[in-house]
Image 1: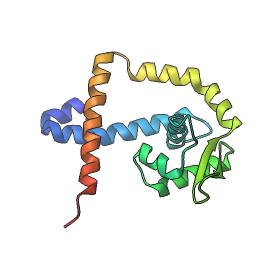
Image 2: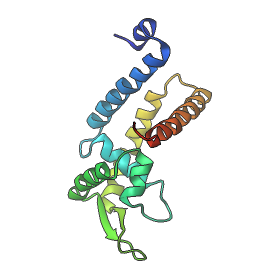
Image 3: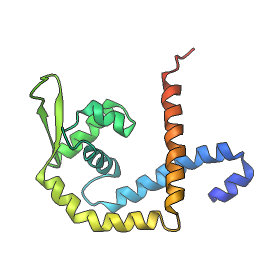
Image 4: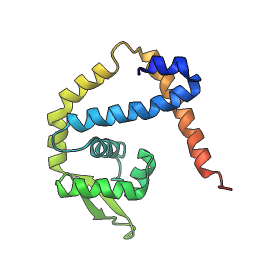
Length: 156
């Protein structure tokens, strides 16, 4: 059943809710088949590390950025560390923290896929205008803020 068929049968808000899950599954499947060496989640973690140019992130910082638990990040890091794509080092100022660094192998991997990633992004956003991208980004950002608030609400 297509997204359009679902939206004719179900209230739009519910259809959109379901579309998030279907989109996530398709995106993850595409990402997992895209890279030979790493999973889509491993790629996402490596990409999120680039958001910390001044100081290597901790697992907790990456968990907040990625929207998942610290334990999930630790599992992903374990796989990346085994592949030689990241290394963990104790923070020089706070020995309780471990900083996560990308390796030279990770930089070579990123360079090898850069052109293919650009091609994938062009295909993903084909026939989607910059204005539409901006609008969807704003809406999803607000919805993410709402989810964060909902997750902070005490359970009854």
